[in-house]
Picture 1 (cartoon, rainbow, N blue to C red):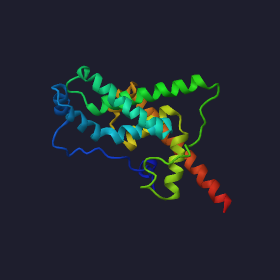
Picture 2: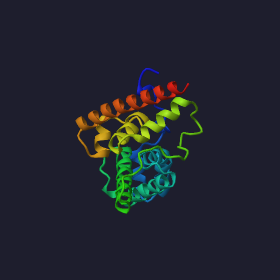
Picture 3: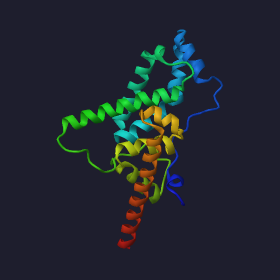
Picture 4: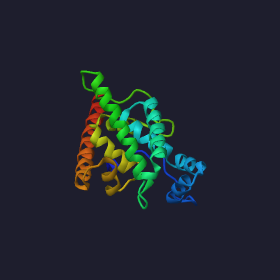
Length: 201
């Protein structure tokens, strides 16, 4: 593999070939057709969970965040700005819910969160095999949260710079800087791991 981007494993993809667009589903939900919101949940649930899992490193908490995000979105749907992307909105809600949970973790502990990969299986565990994928997942998990969020949204969720900036509420220039530094850190960690494995042979 020639780059970190090429090595990053595939995230659950959002079906863009659907016949009913998000704006129509939002309008139908506001008109009282609850099944329309159910379609939105089906469309984005896996991607929202994936973002939450990458941020929190905890499968149960990630599921809770996903449910919480959609519940908040449903309650606040009348505040959704016409013309905006529903994906950006729901990712933003989920990301801020993750940040709230991380803040609570820090309040309940006098120590920093462990800088290691979660020992549990990730959502892509069954679909991806091989030592490279394992090392990459561990490396991403060791990134600072601000870099991990950008890598997740850009490479794993295929979000554009402007959408990432909206979700994380940071300037586009900061998104690009975080992405560059995240790639550099990943390259360094993967090289160190590869060197260490080679020395053990």
